[in-house]
Image (cartoon, rainbow, N blue to C red; front, side, top):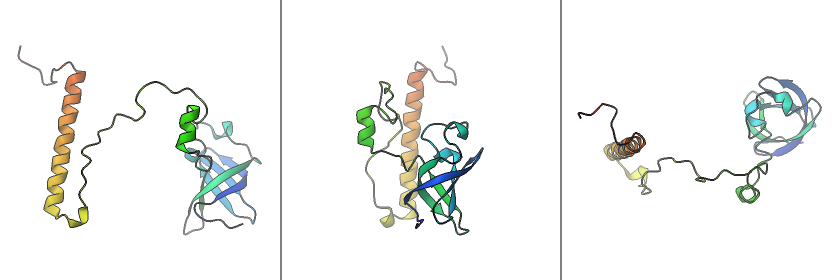
Length: 155
């Protein structure tokens, strides 16, 4: 069995630790699934998700120069986003009402190719973007605090 980065393989859990699980493949190769790659939800105790001898499907994330193989169970099980949206989430749970994307500052959508820009142009652009972000942040915090600044106001 050929083990290469990006391949989805089936293996057997041979050992569990508090930081991950070891998975063996045909041909004697062994890799490790870090606890953060076991499930798309928070894993406090790996024993709640895996047992020794269990057969699992894993995706090969990396093969180090020293031969260590990094694996992921959650990435091997990922479904397309369209399926998750139709079913209301990865495990069929109900979606909470509200914005579908987090409220994150997006900035202006105008992008200039950076390879044609001088260092001074890039610094100027960075300063402008930074100033825009600070202005948006100040507006956002003023709205949340009823329009009063934290520095106090003379009344």
